[in-house]
Image 1 (spheres, protein in one colour):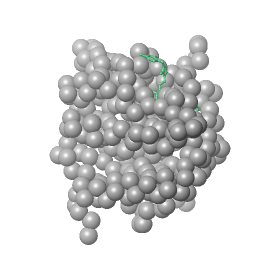
Image 2 (tube, protein in one colour):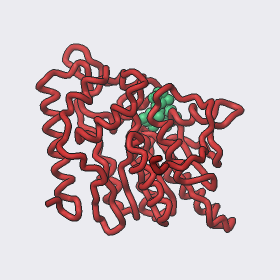
Image 3 (cartoon, helix red, strand yellow):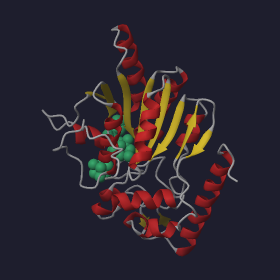
Image 4 (cartoon, protein in one colour):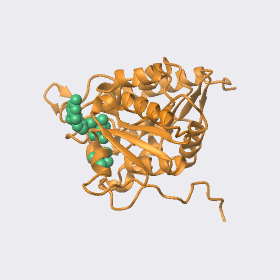
Length: 299
Ligand SMILES: Cc1ncc(C[n+]2csc(CCOP(=O)(O)OP(=O)(O)O)c2C)c(N)n1
Ligand code: SF4
Ligand SMILES: [Mg+2]
C-alpha cells in the first residue's frame, strides 16, 4: 500500500458554504492539516468569511478572527503581540486573505507586517478576482480574463493589464520564507506548509485557487486545471528562503501548451489564437526567468 503522506486529521468541518470544486476550500483544508489545531486564522472580508461563518456556525476547528479587508497584516501583527504578552508560545498565527484583499486593498498592511518582521504566516489564496462581490477584476487577475469589470464587448477584450507580481513585491521585503502552492500538488503543498511552520518571522504563501463560477468551468475539473496551470508555466511552483535562494519545486519536463489551460475556461473563451500565442510567449519568458534565478542553476 502506498505511504500516506497527507495527514488524516481534519481541522475544517464538512457543511461549510463553499461552492462545489472551490480551490480555496481545498487550500484551507490542506493548510490546516499541516498547521494543526493550535492555530488562529485571521481573515478579512472575502469568500472565505462566507465559507467559514454562516451564523451561528463555524467551519474551522481552529481559532478564527474576522476583520476589515485592508487589515490582514495589521491583524496578525496584533495577534502575535497579544499571544506573546499572554505567554502563548505555541500558537501559529495565520492571515488568510484573498487576492483582492492582498494584492490591492491590503497591500500596505502586508508590507508593514513583513517589514516589522512579524512572526506569522500570511496566506494569499488567489482566485484571481474579487469573487465574493461578483467577479470584479483585481490586480491579480491575469491578462485577457473576462470579469464583470473587464467585459468582452466592442473594443474591450478582457483585462488589458498583466497580473501583479505579488511574490516579487513580497520577496523585496526579504521574508524568512515565501513560496507558491497549488492544491493540485498536495504533497508539495504540505511540505511547504511544514517548512513554513518550522520557521519564525514573516512567512508568505501564495496559493493558486481555481474558482468554478468565477472562471466559468465545470466544478469537477479543479484539480486538472491546477495541474495544467503549473505544468504550462502559468503558475510555477517554487520557494525562496531567507538567504534569497530560489528553488523550483516542480519541473515536470517540457512545458505544456497554455492553450489547454485557457480553452478549459469560459473567462478566456473570447481569446484569439494570436492572443493565446502572446500569453504562451509571456509564460515561457517568465519560466525561463525563474530558471535563471533558481539555485543551483539547471544543467
Ligand atoms: C474597504 C472595503 N472595500 C470593499 C469591500 C467589499 N468586499 C467584501 S469582500 C470583497 C471581495 C474580496 O476579494 P478577494 O480578496 O479577492 O477575496 P474573494 O472574494 O475573491 O475570495 C470586497 C470587494 C470591503 N469589505 N471593504
Ligand atoms: S465563488 Fe469561487 S472562491 Fe468563492 S466560494 Fe465559490 S468557488 Fe470558492
Ligand atoms: Mg479573489
